[in-house]
Length: 114
Image (spheres, rainbow, N blue to C red):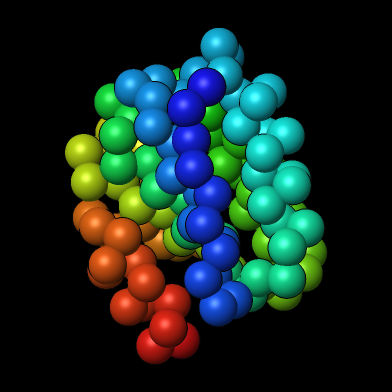
């Protein structure tokens, strides 16, 4: 699985460099998200801008990250330039609790303004 993790100030950025977020890689993604969330961060940005396909397993990984951050009274945001993940969030009626942005710059600006 190809990904990067960056921590800038109090913002953790998990960037998945894969075409798919599905049952083939979600166990690895969940493990990495657990590790990233252990950092002293106030916001976790999931950069899924390279993801062209996300299934219910991928949604489960996103919800795990949201739950972890929520338990710590911290925030989460998703970068989804392609719109595939956002469509799944809309179908699952989760757009009100997990904001998504078209670019990493937009996500950073939104979380810094909060």
